[in-house]
Image (cartoon, rainbow, N blue to C red; front, side, top):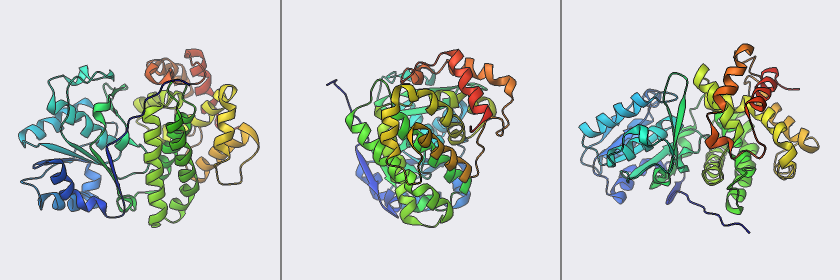
Amino acid sequence: MADYRFNTVASLRVGPGVAGEIGAICAELGIRRPFIVTDPGLMTAGLVAPLRDSAAARCESVSVFTEVTADPSEAVVMAALSQLRADNADGIIGLGGGSSMDVAKAVAVLAKGDQPLSALYGVDQVAGGRLPLVLVPTTAGTGSEVTPVAVITTGETTKAGISSATLLPDIAILDAELTIGLPAHVTAMTGIDAMVHAVEAYTSKIKKNPVSDMLAQRALQLLASNQRRVLSHPQDLAAREAMLLGATLAGQAFANAPVAAVHALAYPLGGHYHMPHGLSNALMLPAVLRFNAVAVEKQYLELSALLPGPVGAGVEGFVDWFEQLIVDAALPNSLSSAGVPEADLPMLATDAMQQQRLLINNPVEVNESAALKLYQAAWGGAR
């Protein structure tokens, strides 16, 4: 038996409407001047005002930063930090998808310590503490509310991750009511993203452990059984909560048994083509599943037994199930159909080699030649 370590968020609050209790939660954490980090879309959708009002009822002041963008840049992080300092905030609420929560994490650390942002990238590079932090996801996908990672865009086509247990929040809030208004394509992409987290955690090479396995299995079961339901019946609150919980359980799994080649090869797609993260993961998933099968066929068959039928026999049946889910969700099912030029594939393979933090977790070694073959397989699409 190998030693292993499992870390997760200190407190998880789950239930419809629980986000409306944010004022009491701030008081519990000693936050008197909360700083809400979110995006303009959520402000327009009316999801920010209830949290702001709840916090205002219990706090001295509330400030809101609404300029988070998809694939947030270092400039967005620094703008948020500047506003937080100007407003003299003493705690942070990250509200939104992975982008808002990642910015909130980074700002919480930067506001407390004296390290520059550039010094935080990598694994366990955070030297100081952070401000009190509450994370509230509005999508069932990234799992960022329970992971020790923040991904920031560092250049025109590059991203870097901050990985430190310091980034785990004090409290994560799962309120399915916040996900009801999601557009169908966002629901589809984020749901598949969460399933990729579960699958990659279950087959992670280095830190896979019994606790992460249990979480990954239950996560995939919840996600796979409810993905089609939330797309066909978007007002189904029970199905929405099942998806949200599944995404969080998958997040807890991969926070401890890290993701691998699907994510490593997806990042260059996001960097070069500003492709949503969930879509880039979906596009790379089938090719990587087939590539890894030589090493993890047993694990794939264990996961296959958790999927709602019909599921074909063997590894190919497992992969086919995901390919059909992607088609049914009306998402592109090949890099070519997503508009990626075939001539760019060697460049993407080269860029993917920069993601060694993730590639070391893959059950089969991925060098540049293998990465190119995987992009070529994904470019051609379903077999």
